[in-house]
Length: 435
Ligand code: AMP
Ligand code: GLY
Image (cartoon, rainbow, N blue to C red; front, side):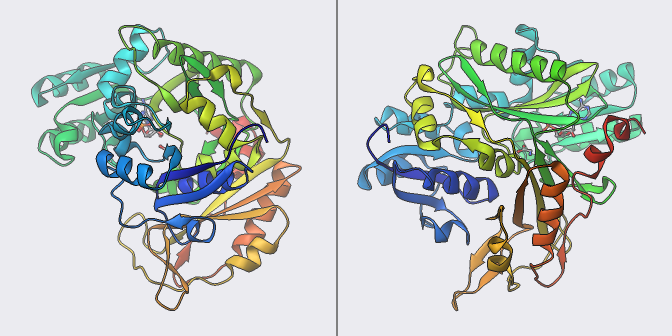
């Protein structure tokens, strides 16, 4: 153990935060661990703090002082965009998460696109608008297919991929008529890119980027990449179809972006995770930056991280990039999301979940909770759309995949739904994306 132990507070309550808390809890440097609000899974490795509002910086700082917290880790984007990291850091407590200005890379798609353009980062052609007439005219000029994006945070719902001009014009009107509230008062219209997507996360501190292993999410609800978009139905890491050249290009983008956060005119106090969402088209292009760990990417990336996450996060938070060293397990990781029937539409909550401990008894299987809670009888129940992330590691991609499904088959709750084809296209190879 290199340093003293610390009390840690993680903000958030999804599968990503369970994975972060789990990885932190493995460290001998982790003393008391709190998760606010947490979920049914974090309850078994940390103390859940349901009463703390993660978006209230002063309240987070007061809690951190009262509990002698030595590291605050911000999971979701909303607290970052409202400046929780700024307040807590100004109060003298190390924070893993960028300041409000750095979080604009996720909080404003216009800011993010201007950042990319100014730094020569490849991305889709675009323009940004504050009125419908100009946005509509640009849609007509570019022609379908197009992507229309509400500028601000819209809980993952503000991106409309429009195959036809009519759909794009409707999306523009919908944004400006208030569907996404204030987030849609500015709109980015961009060309549609095609290809496989790949997420590359990096620890960023003082302008330096340390890339993690790549991961690939599955956004559509149903098998065959059909159905509505979701928060992610499954994920794996690393990504077998990514070539060495593509990986090098993505790493270079992340390094360029990190360096740009430390220089004018985009200078910020960026100490946290930078998420690059790439489309592997002719050379990888950035679809988006996020100012935090990905969900569900984190659930397959962190189990493959070798080394101590407390050491790494403290080095990031304290601006000591020279102390960051990353290494990765050779194992593959595949995760399948078990969701409530009806998700991403309406669904019922409160269903009793059986079989989680049986699944966890399998070798190399970890179950991260997303929407779960404990009822008054101490039973685990569903409490959200995405309920569990079943993660399996394996010496080959196929082994990890088979093991993940073996574990899923041990878990049951009423109306449980999951995709049966997570990772199937990757097994078939790159040509499976050409169809
Ligand atoms: P974003 O929040 O910007 O990443 O968008 C969410 C999702 O929308 C991405 O993961 C892609 O699946 C899709 N998307 C965003 N921008 C584009 C684009 N220019 N072309 C095609 N798909 C896109
Ligand atoms: N997996 C997509 C995201 O975290 O934004």
